[in-house]
Image: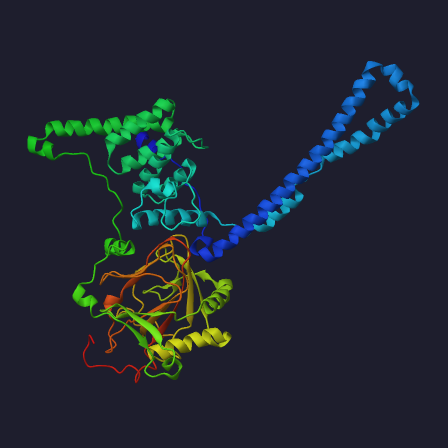
Length: 534
């Protein structure tokens, strides 16, 4: 049926695919300097064009005065031999020089700089990735489109607004993902801003075209018909809208006939399909995870809270910490999550970040089936690995972890440094390998990941918590602190309550570094027990 063909006729934008800027705020800051350099180059070009036009203007004003005088008495003017010579000279030489000046391209410097800088520009994947991040933040933190559009986010230093065109682009990104729920929300926001009189490069017809289809896909036929009629009021010749109108009317008439022929009970139950809303999620604990990210998690009972303490920790009489013990705080009881305060200095943090920045690459996960490393949409960050032998600061940090945990770091993985991108996150996951992943760390030959040490190397204005959905724990980033927990029971069995996630960064720049400690070398430091869950 031709109507069905017309209804899906909206073209989808193409996108490129390679690891992008959007996965690391730290690397995105380089783009600010790139754009600043381009603006300086553009201003130089404008100045050159203005100087050129000023020269042409002076030439024109001079000749205007001269020709005004000459045309009053042409014979008398050229009768003067000097005037005659200068007329020949102007027409033969000077006008050619003016022609060359007019034709001179002043944009060479700017275009050359732009061409050089373009190789460092974000691409389609970056733009789409940043758009998806906004949609993710919208869902995770229960933000409405108007709040995001007006830039009313918590902890913002530099308020920014979305134009109707920006909202339209967000809606189109959702559309390409067949995410009609968000398509509707953002197209409606674009339409509202246009109705309020915002001047834009997009028109209401384009917005209504996407909006009516998104609404139809969610089962709201009445609203889709209403929006299509509104579109046709603005553009009566719109081919797709005319086809859609006939199709919608046909479907509604067909439903009406079915309702009439059905029994009263059946007709009472017959209703327009409800909106689908957000698509069915692959993540079973999505709701709990997002609640924890918003700080709406399970509150620990007073009885359990009384068992949590702050203390000074000397690393079991370690000489380095006897006179200056570490400050330790219990964040959670089961699993036991401990935070160490003031455990890494600002100077050490800057050195670690400087070492990591040139090496940052899109963070990967190990495919549980193939064992291959691959990028995934649920881990938005870039990471780098630092060895202890390459810098004394890294070596010192590694030894500090060993001294405070009592675990051998010689079999641990290298220090991983991560910087999160726009809406950066890592959805719920386990650090240890489960029984169905027997070969996860086979190449390392050091056994499973017995424990995790996580440094927070920046404060985060909003969002970015580390949450444990299984138990309802939320640990918030605080610069200079670190958290530690065991992934395995002393028996070697995995502790499934340690399933955790890094919440999307709503506002700010999140830097962390972590150390995964392995089983080998811990035989006498953390002896195995006979009980499976101890």
